[in-house]
Length: 253
Image 1 (cartoon, rainbow, N blue to C red):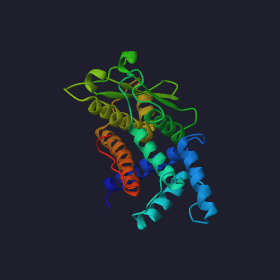
Image 2 (cartoon, rainbow, N blue to C red):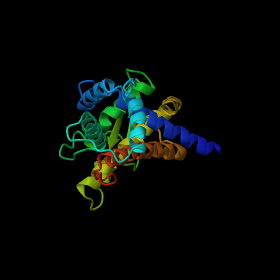
Image 3 (cartoon, rainbow, N blue to C red):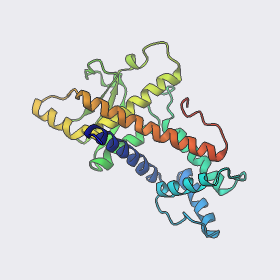
């Protein structure tokens, strides 16, 4: 394996690890965790496997492999298994869901906004905060022709994304296409935060500048991170849809 292939494999593994960690961090009072608890109770009563996995991501990996090996499985309506898979399917859809109805909050919780916070805090320090803002609210920043920019505050614990909405809305696009631009662009900037923050800090310090243009290699790596996230989500959605014998328009929604 060449050096560049190894780098991209590491990035893909890092993206998947972030997603698994984010999934595990789902609060206990959320429907997905409640459905998991009820499902595990059923498995325990039946003395079936997987119930002893504490992390949701570990439980999921083992259970999906087991279920797929016995496909097709008929899950009765209202059964704990079906309720859990339906909540997982909903979580996977919500992760990418956004709405342009409220433009001052481009990414609606609990999706990419919370994922951005999780990645920043888990990669660096709990005090590191990452959020998204609209271009109009941060007009002092020069985006240098880019549709978005990762801005780092001088005290280094506040990271946020600035969008150029004129660029994002460019062309005769549907609402969903524009939403997808925001989604993938946000993930791209999260990739920069995950992979390149120390380099950006150092370049800002050396040049005494608030903004630093990343290298072409960094741009490629951040895009690879973004599409690794989207690929994992698409793959999981397809697997769950198959088990539920339902249609999931993975590439469209």
